[in-house]
Each structure stands twice: as C-alpha cells, then as structure tokens.
Image (tube, rainbow, N blue to C red; front, side, top):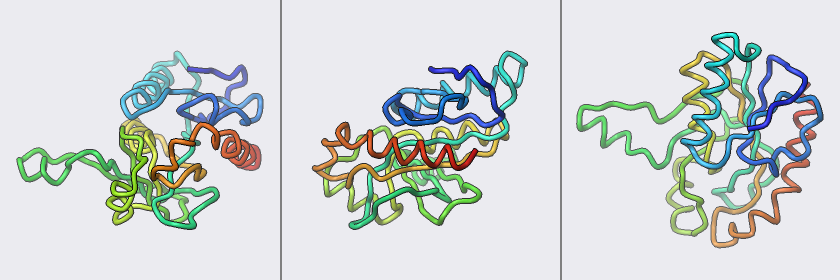
Length: 191
C-alpha cells in the first residue's frame, strides 16, 4: 500500500506499482496487490479509515490498470461502463436460494464491459468464453466496484489493453510500462 503525501478527495487505486509508475507526483494513490480479495481488503481499509476520521475523506475511487482484450483488434484506453465477476457462479447460487451480486454499472463509462476474476486469462478457449459476455478482462475491477458500492463511493474504471488474454498474455510484464504511461497521462488530464 502506498500513500501520497498530498491528499485529494480522489483516490487512485492500482494493483501494482508498475501500472501506476507514471501517475503524477502528488496523486493520492493506493497500491493494492493482485487479485480480488487483496484489492477489496486494501480499498476497504482505506474507506473504513476515511469514514472514521483516520484518513481524509474519499469522494471518488479511480481504478487504473491493465486489461486483456477479449476481442481482436481491441487496443488503447477504455472506461468500462459495467464490470462483472466472471468466476462467481451467481446464477447457480441464486438457484440454490443464495442470490449474490456479480455485476455493477459504472457511471460515465464508454460502454465497455470488464470481466474480473482471480484467474490470469492466457488461453484462447477461456478468452472465447469470456468474449461472449465482456470486452476486457482484469483481476481487480469488480472487487473494487463491490467495495466502493458498499461504502457509497463512486468508482471509475480506467483500463489500458496490455495483451490479448490468450497464450501471448504471458508477455504481460513487458507490456506494463507502455500501458502505465497511458494511464499516467489519463490521470494527469483528469485532474
């Protein structure tokens, strides 16, 4: 977890330091770690502390990061309008009498759908399955949406395509810096 020295009502959240490497100095920044549970826990701690006066208030959470493209020729920066948990069997649980929420609409998005799960998607078969319900895939967005919604704090998702969520995705570490530069520019312009 990283805290900026200058506080803002906007909290920028990234899973890794590498994805946030080019965020402007002075940005209120939280590095959560990879995966849904880790991201949710880190954000919940900050929002709970803000509610109780241990941290400055948070008026908006902005999740920046990389994502795999689930459709060919999809590249660039996206502002998803909807995020789903692709590895939560919400329909099965509802049929068993335990309805759970597995999707959140995000205001101000571009129409893109982001699928979130703890699995790093790097095979063509899984990519094709997910492409039927989403445009992009990541490992933290839905968890952050769940926490932000529970705390009543608006969320924005900002994702840059780093790979094709197929066998070539294993080259993700080499693609992160280029994506981080685009994310940093977006944060600087959004200030």
